[in-house]
Length: 171
Image 1 (cartoon, rainbow, N blue to C red):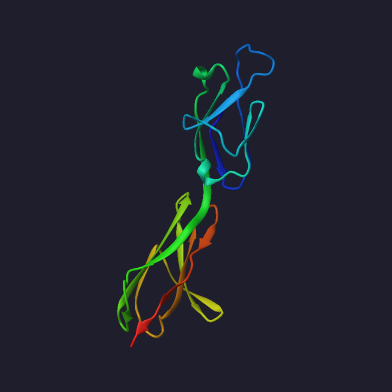
Image 2 (cartoon, rainbow, N blue to C red):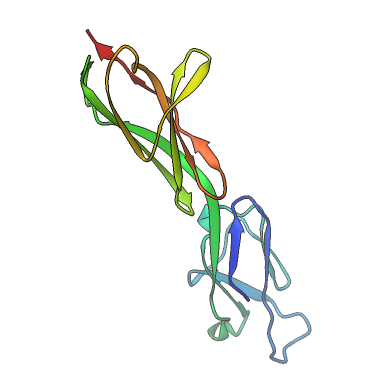
């Protein structure tokens, strides 16, 4: 078994082999992080199929011939790369905002590899205007800056946008 790096939603087949002289059709057991695999993965003969691969599949995999579990293979780490998910915006203002108040919006997400680019947008009718870049943006609330804001998180695998948050200054 060799280390693998895959992208979430791809298909992956791992193969286990032995150099020992055994019966014609040995049965193989598969392990993830030292625990027997007993969930939604297809195994046939000496192959483990992950289709589709999910981010939860990251971990150390090993295999052994049934009846010889103490002689398991060396563990191989499966590294799953995935685009940002669970992208959300938090607002530093905990209550009503007034005209001229400073607000900071922060974008967060789960991604592998980590997000390398955050872009902020403000929705104005049917259009979305770029309002900044970076994990956080700060600005004073005015009639020109009041509106619906969202962020886009991007890494090498892809991008995802957050839901919108309203920034509205009171009179």
